[in-house]
Image 1 (cartoon, helix red, strand yellow):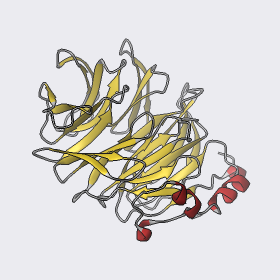
Image 2 (cartoon, one colour):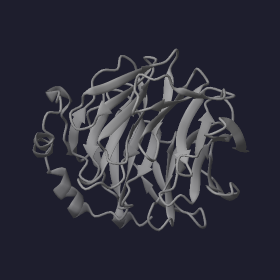
Image 3 (spheres, rainbow, N blue to C red):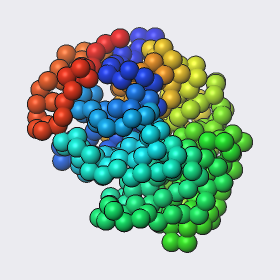
Amino acid sequence: MDKKKVAVPLVCHGHSRPVVDLFYSPITPDGFFLISASKDSHPMLRNGETADWIGTFEGHKGAVWSSCLDNNALRAASASADFSAKLWDALTGDVLHSFEHKHIVRACAFSEDTKRLLTGGFEKILRVFDLNRLDAPPTEVDKSPGSVRTLTWLHSDQTILSSCADIGGVRLWDVRSGKIVQTLETKSPVTSAEVSQDGRYITTADGSTVKFWDANHFGLVKSYEMPCNIESASLEPKSGEKFVAGGEDMWVRVFDFFTGEEIGCNKGHHGPVHCVRFSPTGESYASGSEDGTIRIWQTTPNQEENEKRVKHGVDEVAKKIEGFHINNKEAKTSEKP
């Protein structure tokens, strides 16, 4: 990487424990948003473009392992070690409903039509909750072979994709039958699974390998060995020509999708990188770490533009989100390292 083009990230403080999951909303009429899950039990919502803090969701009593936003970024969901998944109003920060479980909930995902919420965790059961009937019992998908680590929807909500914390492979479930229809084989447990924005690829990270699968025929398209154990990987959503990966060596690396060649290496985190995600515009990507920070990296580094954004305080944005239960102690601006 050209040393003259060193990326200067926006550094987002606020979490007091490791950041373990990141999720970008699609682009909405109000822009796009980033929600983060942390072991500090308080998911945080940020402006996805400026990284400005908007609000903190208060209510969980244990580590939050996963968080997500619906397609309009009007509702949020979170999965926690307090044996619950919660549905939130993303405009006010209010809890709309708490879905009680019998063990740690590790993953959650809104359906594409935003009418259902999928959860999974240590119980080894995939549950689908009807968000139009919050008190109705969930539909239970057939028992997972292991503790659920990741979940996502595929094929216009006809298929569920899941991975386990203790065994390798990605399982594809038919929603109607509730049965596993196919398994994408991996040597190690899959710690990250992402469906590309255009629906063409499934990106997975297992051990020190990043793999790309055809999301329709499920064949293996690309498989690249990484320099270290990788916990998360994300494909650039617009051109699909590059991907980012982060893991135990604390660096966020950029690779060429077609060749696997490393084309960038971003240093700055002070602990293992647990999650990386591209923004929906493809112009930036976020990384979350054991060090408790989120860093937003520009796809094409532009230090002058970054510095302008860094000076943009949180107060202006926070005031626009009328009614959000803002905890002033949590309010942190984005700043340079």
